[in-house]
Length: 437
Ligand code: SAM
Ligand code: SF4
View 1 (cartoon, helix red, strand yellow):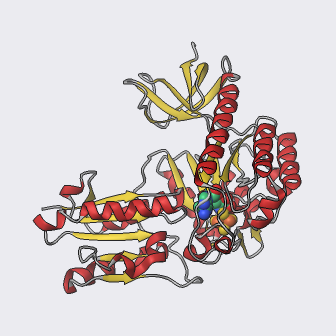
View 2 (cartoon, rainbow, N blue to C red; view 1 turned 135 degrees about the horizontal axis):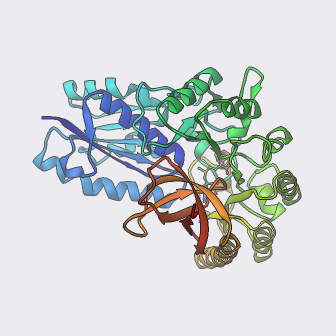
């Protein structure tokens, strides 16, 4: 009987793409994917450790999976990703049903780990040192989409922002050989993919033998068949004029940019070790808007960082009002192991953190709604990506500047580019009608 695997993914796009690589490896070993965990011979949880809440969820979920072992002694349960790299053998303590724990850089070892597991039936663990080469290339990647694809261009982070656990888990920055990146992009284009999204914790510090991030974008722009290029995440202090000058000039570079602010107060930014201040951040936004007025900027913001006063928080709200982000991912500060901020007193009360988060999200919703409504009546080119959850016979896709649009799709195939007139808008999405020809 065909062997099956079930994989659950928490966290960022890096994790989503790691799961695509793991799925590719498992399919190469003869496993097929199942959304039903009760049918699986291998269950993997790809974990995130960026915030405490995401980490707790994993332990709860593991407890739920335990029962499947009773009826199926051959079932293998594994934990991978950042929390696996962080907690390592803690996953085995009191959990004899967990068979395998491996970190993000150990993905390539999965075939040998599974083989050992099958022959020896003992708990197995693989983790990496900070400078270990990551698994940039795997033979097959089982992608979630047939039209847009992630490409890892670098791994790790050298920034050590004081709140962030990532550098301790994903290690030091290592950039991938550009030949290998370009080859992957060409291969994707040959298989019909039209959009790529470059991934890394700090993509604009990408550098490989004097070939920098802007050079990489320009080279990818030359690949026929690829029509859209996106990337995430850049660090505001590392985004160079050379990269900013490409907006509006490099035809395939999408006009959206995720530029994580984290906080609007210079005192808080300093304690976060973000190495920019509100003035330099805003001057980059202004520069980008001069180069490309239609650019849609999104952000990550943390509220309630140690020592954040009401006046500090107002500085964050002020930047949100000034920049008018297209989207904001906002979080309450969560103390993480190893990080420098652990030495600061987490002194903003939980209710205050929640109140600030609500105020920020309410403001952002209002801004997003206004920005989206201003697009009503415009024509947008949308890539049809999948069927829409908003209704039968509707498809969903994104504009060049990354806004979600739902539209009637009876005449459209997934992968088509369609011109739509925007008719309706909410804070989170648009509704478009095909242009009458
Ligand atoms: N490299 C990206 C950058 O420079 O902004 C961020 C990557 S991090 C995985 C994603 C987001 O999680 C961060 O931008 C930050 O807003 C949030 N985050 C990270 N650590 C956090 C913490 N300890 N508490 C709350 N949010 C956190
Ligand atoms: Fe974390 Fe800062 Fe690196 Fe982003 S740049 S991954 S927030 S340490």
